[in-house]
Length: 436
Image 1 (cartoon, rainbow, N blue to C red):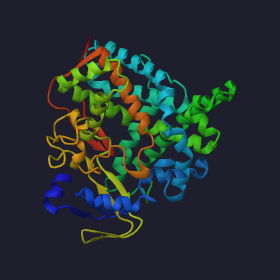
Image 2 (cartoon, helix red, strand yellow):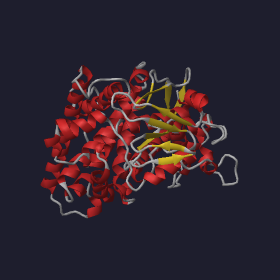
Image 3 (cartoon, one colour):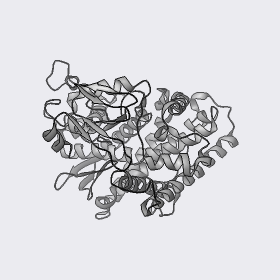
Image 4 (cartoon, rainbow, N blue to C red):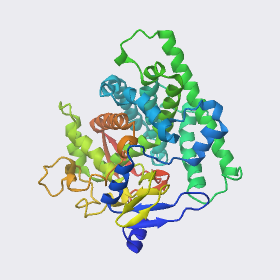
């Protein structure tokens, strides 16, 4: 659709909001949305799910005690929250603290894939479930300091971890129906809105159960350990218990499908580019601590298949862009995925070429020749993804273990992607895994 709109209307496209939604303007030139986003970055407004905002600020207001998290808070409430959580989530030492445990989880996941590969077409139908189990197990370890047991055989539907995975998927499906299509949920409690409220309730209850158990273990163990050895939850508890609870909840909400999708995307590109896979495997098995080529593979995959296809800001003031007036309160969309696949920005843009992130500046493929605002898989500015460092660490750790033990191929037509709030791969997963 973005390509059709661009071809028909040009580089600035306005879409009228309906049913109380804000008007939208799509800016197809990176210098245009760069102008708006940078002018807004002192106090950026990034609309989230209106249904989640309503749920937290109206329906369950007493539950959240005025703390609405990075997902739904705006203005000073958002800035106050982000300022409190930054020290716990953005320190470089965070990577070293969790590296050994994440390494073990990745090893278990690779062994599990090898085991499941022999069970007929199970992985063709259920790879997404297995990848989300690994992603949840990993983010829980980082956020809570605990394992959840999500990668056990025959994980039952009512297992709390399985419930969190299902909640994450149901929230996307239902929010997509309510907020991207005409719906009267803001005036009437529709059937899908009632389902979504139940899903939000369940996600909160299960998350809080895990968080309370982690708190109990922390209190039982005592707090007399070096600060750098404390989990994110423990660090935040010493600052603000309500903030700690919300941040842990949002990590368990946002760190599942996002990491699973991103990792699956890299596996797909490695599968259809065997020479790249061979080079990445050689690096994975080398003694070189900095896995630059594997990291380039991750960057290149996120360029082609980002989790979110576009970035968004709601203007807090009027703007003039190329002579066009964009009023305050307009949603300005940067179509990053669409632009990232244009040859005028990235030569051979449809091809998976990790080298573009490694070559010298004089090389025609050098990524820096493109405008820096085009590829933004983790967002922009002070509202960029706070979990970026954690996500990259999880993905890289898994790929190192995977490449050392498994050769991956792909049989069949190219993988397909559908967008429901975030990008998702369409089944079946035609991977061929081979132990090496």
